[in-house]
Amino acid sequence: DLGPKGRKLGFAEDVEYCSRLIARGFEFFYIPSVIVHHPVYPERLNKKYLLSWQYNCGKSDALSARDLGDVVKIIGVPRYLVRRALTHLSGWILSWRSRPRFYHRLRLAYTLGEIVGHARSDA
Image (cartoon, rainbow, N blue to C red; front, side, top):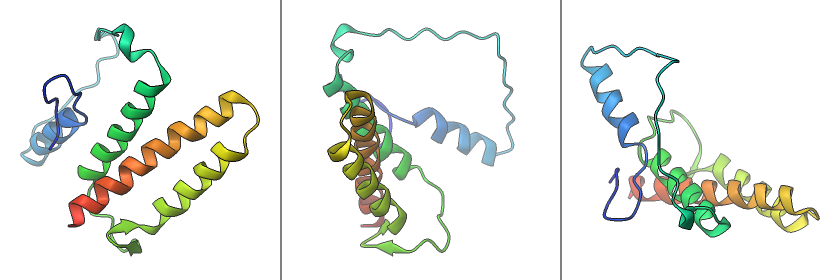
């Protein structure tokens, strides 16, 4: 379920892969001098793309999430995510300035992605 499919971006496949390697005893090192170049295409420099990207990041993070322990769930979705979604929805609706309004809209998109990811992984 993770990784790119055609022109659609994938998310967290590297984290999932590294988690499997760590479980098998491999070690990783942080090398701050390493530089990774990612192309940024013009069609990705708009709000619609950023909202879609945040949604897919949230969904992917939920699909690759570890056991949440005794978290209270509603239809397979952690209750705290419902509360977070309502917080960002109200922030989006009630913010007068464009920056905070868009911030809440991005966070809402991410949280909705998490909700969908958890609901699918629990199905």
